[in-house]
Image 1: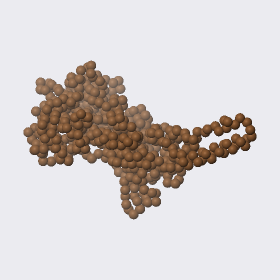
Image 2: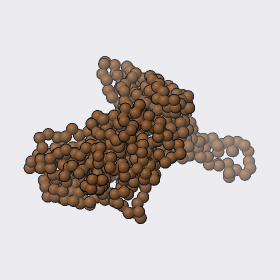
Image 3: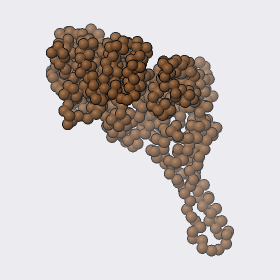
Image 4: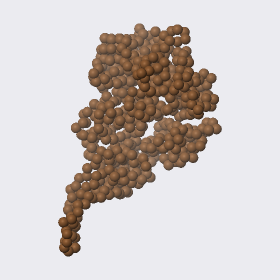
Length: 599
């Protein structure tokens, strides 16, 4: 019965207590006993636990007996809070009828709280405001209620007060989910119409497909079809998520669950696709999700070129579980064959790198991240460039444009000066500044996306002692002075170290890269010059000094001319060695270039 089902998600700014609240709801339902319980129970990746953040939205079915005595099935989707994973949030919202909007009583409404709420409103979700961390000494419930009314436009009188850490108010929250979030609509007897909102790969059973059913019923033994490519499979099993996969054999309209259909061809399954019955298909596919637009680009290469095929398979399996990852084939003279990947931000890039290394045992090298530039060539032609290797010669270029973002920063007023200085340093132009109340300020900046890539978020957090929040939208392209920075080792350009940079920052970037490489490259029998150049113009240089053999050790007397003769002979040998010498670049050198901004 769909009347006893409630599908809801938890949305909030990063660090407002979503995962802790999910832990309490799961404990309340008795899905896990105290002995096996661990914090962040839905965050099943090591990286999530280490960093204390949610990366993947996770679904779980919670049984609940309401005050009316009826047994309800509550399908909860826990979502990430970091701006880089807003795509995960949009997919979770598509699967629900309601959302718990969590606000930290110590920090109030922040940037991602607003953007996630607007995302939920776009999908006509019923929003239940929840004020968390009421047990903290710094909690200011009255002020938080005022912010919910003023900033979010929601009725703060209906806001639920909870402490996810202590479990206070959780019973009232579960009852509010039943009373205030509408049940799903849909006819279990109609043609099957289900949305794929996530997948993961099981090495023994193939692709496990995560579904939200809008119409119809899916059963064991039934033939299903994916509407995007028409491929047909037979359902082996179906079930729900109760931390583990629990087989029920059947799912009907309104349910959130999984199916296994012996799918070994990973590319057949796409997140956002519609699943329907092969014999009785639905009339049209579901709208799916908005197109994901990567903003950061980097190339991935296997450390050992023989592992290329293994890396390709790993990326295919990773894309199942991370639909926002985009990749295509790429190659480099220095590193061989690899893939050019698009990411939603620098944290997304770091997470993909760690998941490839941990979950798939891949040893990989990432090149320096870049954004997508518009380059206007002479003769009115315009091309998009995100890879330094594809950058045309200077003589053919008429002008270039780089992507800009509309950045929203909400901060306590005491940190205002430091944050304005940081934004100006990053070429930001302030377009608006609003005092939300006597303590908090919202600033809007137009800023180049490339300036935010490396260390902006970390520096913003340290400057504001963690209180400032940051959110951004891509606003368009603006003219810029672009240059291709080449790194030369022993006079030869290393294509994998090339970067596209703003001309005003080129000297600083080149100097830092050269300094880092000088510390990473092992010394040889000859001097190695490391140079940064724009075209033929050298703008920075460092030298790795030669290892020098003591050729005078055998001279225990005699004339100075004999010693000079030996030194001249050594000098000639080093010159000759330099001409034929080849510099080995360790893997750590590529990683060092990625960290050029971390002073």
